Structures are given as C-alpha cells and as structure tokens.
Amino acid sequence: MMLEVDALTTRYGALTALHDASLRVDAGEVVALVGPNGAGKTTLLASVVGLLQPSSGTIRFAGTTITGNDPAANLAAGLALVPERRRIFKDLTVAENLRLAGNTVAKSLRKPRMEQMAELFPVLREKWDVSAGYLSGGQAQQLAVARALMSEPKLLLLDEPCLGLSPTMVDVIFELIDTLRAQGRTILVVEQQAQRVLTIADRGYVLRTGEIVAEGAGPDLAGRPDLFEAYVGGSS
Amino acid sequence: MTDVVQNLIDGLGAGSTYALLAVGVSMLFGVMHLVNFAHGELLTVGAYVIYGMRSNGISWLAVIPVAIASAVVLSMLIELVAFRRVRSASAFTLLLTSFAIEILSHAAWRIGVSSTPRRYEAPQIAFKVVEVGPFNIEVWDVISIAVAVACFAGTAIMLRTTMFGLAVRAASEDFDAARLMGVKANRVISGAFAFAGLLAGIAGALWLVRRGQADPRMGAEPLLKAVIAAIIGGLGSLPGAVVGGLSLGVAEVFFRSWLPSDLQGLTDSAVFVVIAVLFVVRPQGLFDVETAERV
Image: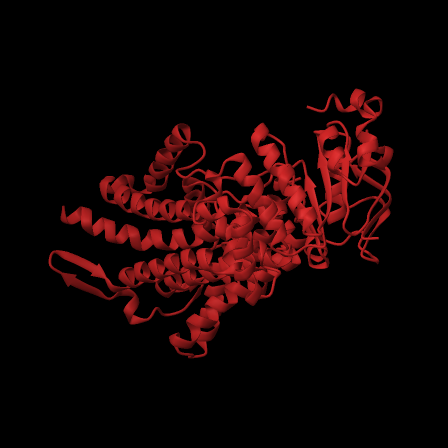
C-alpha cells in the first residue's frame, strides 16, 4: 500500500473541515476523490503533504508514518502535490519554476529532468524563458504538474487540475492523467467533474462535509448518480 | 545647474545607505510579511564593534569586516531567537515583536555600555574632498555609491542565478507553494535574514565610518527612513526599495538646499509631505508586488 490515511481529522480553529476520513491508494492506481465545494477535499490533500497539521489520525506513506511531517520532508519521501489554483510562481520564468522545483534533486539530475519536462509538455519549451505570469490557464496547469514531476514523486496528488480551464484544456488534462498512468505513476486526484474523473479512476471516494460517504471502483461510483449528484451538483 | 549636480551626488550618497537598508527590509517583508523595525539595530551593533575595536587600536581594514559580520550574526540571531517562534502569527504580532527587539536593544546598550555616546575618530578618507571642475566631491560619497551599486548588482545576480535566490523570490510570492517545492522554510528565512543583515552591515559601515560615534538609539532614524523607502518602492519589491531609498536621499538633500536656513528643521517634514501625497496617488507604492495569501 502506498498511501494510507486513517481516521484523519483536521480543524481550522473551531471548524472541523475533515472528520475521521480514511482512504488508501495502492501503487499504480489512479484514485479519485470527489465531493462538493467545501467538502474537505483540499484540506485532506493539504493535511497529507503537511501544509496543514491534522488534529488526530495517522498518515502512512510507503510503510512509514508521516503524520505531522513538513512538506519538504514529504517531498523528499516521494509525495508531491499540485495545489489547487496551480500556484505557479508568476514572477519566475517557466525554466526558473522548474529549476526551483528541482531544488531537492541532485544537481546532475536537474537539467535532464527539465529536459524531460520540456518533452512531455512541448508548450512549456516554447515559453521557457517567459515569466510564468504570462501563461494561459492550461499552460499554467501543465507547468504546475511539471513542477511536481521534477522530484520524480512516487505519488502525485492533483488538486482540481481542471479548475477554470476551457473544455479543450480539460481534455488535455485528462489525456495527461492517462499518459501519467501509462508511465506507471500513482495518482490521487481531487476533481469537481465527478463523473468524468470517476470513469477513468481505478477507485474513488466521495467526500461530503468532511466525511467519506462512499467508496468503490471508479466506474461503479460514476454509475451511481444518486450517490453524489445531489451533493456534487452535477458532473459538468 | 552646478548646484543640482552637486546635490544629486550628495543625495545619492545618503540615499545609497537608505536603499541598502530598504532592500533588506523589503526582502524580509517579502518572505515573512514582517516590517522589521529591529533591522536598524544592526547598524548599532556595527557602531559599537567599531568603537570597541578602534579604542583598542585595531586597523580600520580589520574593523570593517568584523562590523559587517556582526550585523549578519545579529540578524540571524534575532530571527532564531525571536521571529522563528512567532512566524505563523499575525502581521501585527510580528510587528510588535520587532518593536520589542528594538527597545530591548536600546536598553541593552544603555545598560551594557552607557547612555552617552561613545566616540571614535573617523579615518581621514571619510571627509576627503576632491575638486572636479566646479564640483566638490566627497570621496566617501563616491565610494558609498560605488559599493551600493555593486551590492544591488550582486543582489540582482544572486536572485536570478542561485537556488537560494529563486527560493527567496518564490517564497515572497507564495510561501506555501515554495514549501511544496521542497524549499525549507527555516533555511530560506534564515538565509534572507543573513542576506538582509549583510546589506545592513555594509550600509552601516558606509555610514559609521563618517559618523564617529556609537549611541544606543542611533539605529532608529535610518531604519525609519529605510522603511519609508521600502514602502515608497512598494513593500516586497527590491528594485522598488532601491528607487525608494535613492529618491528619499536625493529629496532630503534638495529640500535642505532649497529651504531657507531658518526653516532647515523642516526638511524631514517637507519630505514626508511629498511622501504623503505619493501615497494618496499610489497607495501600493511605485512598484506593484504580486503576493498570495497563506493557506
């Protein structure tokens, strides 16, 4: 088992954003986490990577307990998050974003990795020395994913990768998830477009007001609109 | 015309000290959202180091590097002892912490050394004047400007080419996103304090060689000017801090030369009026700064 989250609770002051949530991700799987706005999806991912400190529960990654570790330690262990709203560094060029993302990587590996990213995302090569603030939403999302891949993570966490993108770009991102899966990568993806992401996921979890309310094979969950449509508010 | 050029040189000489301090203030604001009013104490420690070493007859050439190093060490120490513990607190708490350190520092020098100024003799070069055509140029002004320019260029190169520089820029824009890239919060913040301390140490050395005395509260006024310079430039913008510092220095010298002699005391007020007007027109400062809210 690659990631095992057990009874995780995270609070913002008096507000419990995540309550007793448990999930697992096995090596090579694509797992989808869906649910309405404010369900705690982002909180869960942020707690897993260590941006937020959970108040109880445990997180195990590749056999080690990592609860409470900081993001740098988790990245070194092989856990990378592509955050919601991408959060690329707009003042840095595309190349600088990637170079910084490779700061934990041995110096000799940095250049070859950047080259790999340019091959995987040709659009980034075109904008190589352009400030990332000038990228379109889709380009920025590709940069955000490339940044996370610079550390060759064992598990990639994607938080709403399609947020604010045009339908064409959404297709590109779904293709990208397919490509990454074909490369044997393990992915946990949070997405508003519940039905679409569940159809491509091996397994899925439905999160609502901080609690996991359903889990199962991705296509099975996708075929049960009764389960989440009322909560998720459609799949468009 | 001669006056204008003369004032410009004098102003840039004074302004380069403000600018060096302001770049540090702005950098610390960028990575920590902290307006560090304790930053001026780095000048004070340098002054007492100079006083202490010069009273023992140690050569200026040895004194200056030690004075600069003392500013770097104190800056890192302040971060480690005080700011690290309140890092995730509100901006207001950080601000109060910086005031507390400033007041503690004033008290420490007063109790530890004396509340009266300690004097040391300035080296000859500090007041050497050469005539170039119609201009009387103070050699130390030229040295100050040259050193400051070298520091600004060095800072720009550091920010563009080193991993630390990239981390500082990234952390200034979005600290949590930088942590997600594996940037270690302690390292980038401690490094920023060290770098800001280095610039403050150099600014201090340039200023103190001429000043000739050390006293407990001496850091407060230049720091206030530097904070204003950083705000003029747009807090968090390093080019803005340079422009802000230099303009402030130049503005002071021009007002001093324009104001009638019995109104000289109003120089600072006149400069502040201009700044007040600037903030009405452009509240965000001269340069726009991109920042993200923390999670």
